[in-house]
Length: 282
Ligand SMILES: Nc1ncnc2c1ncn2[C@@H]1O[C@H](COP(=O)(O)OP(=O)(O)OP(=O)(O)O)[C@@H](O)[C@H]1O
Image 1 (cartoon, rainbow, N blue to C red):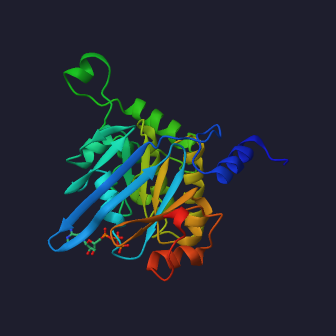
Image 2: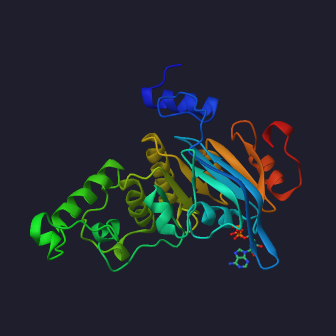
């Protein structure tokens, strides 16, 4: 087939499931969960939930309202501590007590209600909590910030991700469009040696054009070899970008499907319980 190289790799990935950026099928997942349980009083939000994310893939997580998607993502990102079960990153068991613990080992989460500070600049937002200090005594003793270096790195990161439609790195985040804000949040996540990016409903609040840009951004980030977990109710978006789809129902993983082998109505039927998934997907 006559495809440019990047499209050919993409084509291979799409045909064979989880693969690395070179198109080689991967055997070991980067992030896994087994038997996660989370109870809120009498509600069981996670009921022995399993999860697997492979290197270089976009894994969509779908499920009906209340299925436990957010609880799963919160457990993986350190925002809640499961009552039982095990999470492994790169094969090592991890035990997060706070989102900071997950960030420190490379799991970055971009929430729908973005944790950006509107009044601060793009560069300040990107380095929030990880500010660079000036070299030497100025930085060590006087704790002076190295603004120039932060601006330079912020600009580089945004350019790399094709986000330099943003004119001024000192622009406050409140003056950006919704899509651009998502871009800054993703660039921040991608900038700090993350291993995994989790995106919670990234297009929910966006218009058509901005959603498109965010979907392109997801493809760009995947193209750089970084795996993404995408939680979304938007089936066309899920089917457009996901390599695999994890279907969550009644607090646990029901099945994982290949978006090329199933239709959107199949996915919705599995999600709602109208149809049972075939044994090989379960
Ligand atoms: N902090 C909480 N306190 C009490 N119950 C909770 C809490 N968080 C979640 N739940 C309950 O746990 C169950 C799973 O919720 P969760 O938010 O994980 O589902 P979801 O699949 O993300 O739903 P949605 O798509 O509607 O956001 C629901 O019944 C919800 O009411």
